Image 1 (cartoon, rainbow, N blue to C red):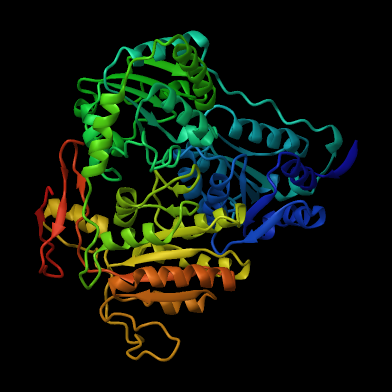
Image 2: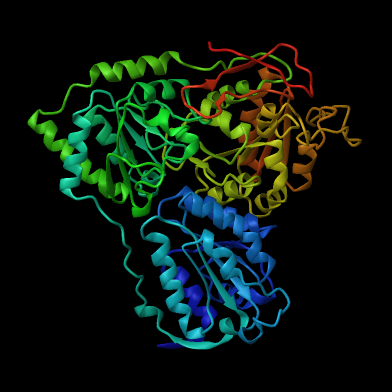
Length: 602
C-alpha cells in the first residue's frame, strides 16, 4: 500500500485504465488534480480555450480510435456547466468520455461558496453517472465505477466532481494491485441468431441497417462478412457510416429525411425486411413511422434493453452488443452457406445496384458564386479514402451526408443527435490528437465555424494539423430553409459590410473577402496562428484543397479553406416522410433575401 493524495490516486487510475489523454482548462479548485498530472507524467494534456471545447475534443478523441476514452478537466462552477453540452452530445451518440471537475470544499457546499454549483444534479440527465465525491477514500472506487459504466452496456459519459479538500486528503491506495472492474456486454444466443436469420431468409428483399453500435463495437469487418455471406444490401445510419465502404457492391446508401441518398431511400421503400443492428431508429432516419414500417418486418438488435421498442415495436428484438450479435449471425450464416440453404438474392441485389448507379443528385455546377454541391464533388476528387471527416449540423452536414464518400469505420465523426454548433473545430482537434497519421478534414458552415473558432489557436499551439473547409453563404442556411414554412427570412442573415475587408490581392495573399459576407474568416484564422485560404471560383476548388493539405503537413497547424457560396441554396430534404423528399435546384436568379426554388426530380 502507498499513502498519497486522492488526486494522485485518481490520476494513477486514469493511466491504469488507459485514459491517458486529457483536454481542459485549469483553475483554483482543480489545481490539485493538475499538480498530480504534472507530477505523475502519465497523462498528456491539451489546453483548450473554452471548457465546452475541451469536452468536444474528448469526444473527437474517443471516436477516432478503438478503445479510447477522452478526458475533459475543468475547475468548479462555470467549467462544469460549460461541459454540459459536450456531455449531452456524448450521451446522445453513445460516446464514453470522462469529465472531471473541481469543487468547493465539502464544508462549504451549502454556503453558496464562490463558483460552487451542484454540478452533479445538473449533469445527471446527460451522463451514466454524475457524482460529487465527499469522502477521499471513495475516490478510487468512484473512478473504477466510472470506467466500468462508460464501457458497459450502451457507452456514455460520466462526470466526477472533486471538492478541493477531497483532492488534497491523503489516502491509502495500492496501484500495483488495482484491477479494472469487469465490463458487462450482453450477447445474442445461438437460438436468437438462428431465429433472426430464419426471418431474414424468409423474406424476398431484405436489408441490414447498420448503426453506430457497430462502430463502437469495432465490428465493421463482421458486418461486411455477414452481408457478403447472405448477399444482403446494407444501409448505414449517419452514426454507422463507414461500417461498410461506400464503394462496396452491397452498400445501398443512407436512408432518411436529410442525410440520405436518393437511391438509399428508393431501395429502402422496395424492401420487405429490415435487420437493424446497433441503431436507434432516429427520427431523421425514419421520418414518419407509418411510411417507414409499411410492408416491412423488423428485427432490432441493441445493447441497451430499453432501446428495444422505444421508437416502435419490432417483430423480434435481441438485446446484445453489436459485435457479439454479428459474431453469432456470421456463425449461423456460415452454417447455412455450408449446407446450401441460403436463398438466391442476385435479382434483389442487382436492383439495388441499378438504383445506386442511376439515382443521383446533380453536383457539377459551374456557377459563380459557387453552389455547395460542387464543393463536395471536388472534396471527393481531392481527398482519398483514408480521409477522416468531422462535422456537426447544418446544411453543410446534410449536403456532406448526401454527397461525400466514406470508406472506413471511424472516418465519419459527426455529432448525430445533439448537433451542437461549434462542435466541429474541437472534435477535429481531438481526432487529430488521437490519430495524427490519418488526414482529417473538417467541414463547417460559417455559423458553426464562428461558434468556437477560438479553439483554432489550440491547433496552432499544439501542432494539430488538419484542413477545415468552411462553406460560407453568410446565412444560417438550415434555419433559413426551414423558415420557408413560415414565409419568413428572419434573424438568419450573417452578412454585413466589413470595413476591414481587403480589396486588393498582394503577392502571396489570398483573394479578398467578398463584400457583404461579414466576418473575414481568413484573417481570423491567421490571427489565431493558422493558415487561411479563400476560393470563389469553382474551377479553383480542387487546387485550393490540395494546397491546404500540403500547407497543413508543412506547417503542422489547421488550414482553413473558406469557399464563398451563393447566398441561398435549398438542399434536398423531406419534411416528414422518406417517400416525399423534395429535390431542389435553385433558379438561375434568386433575390438575396427572398429565397425561391423550383422542385426538380431529375
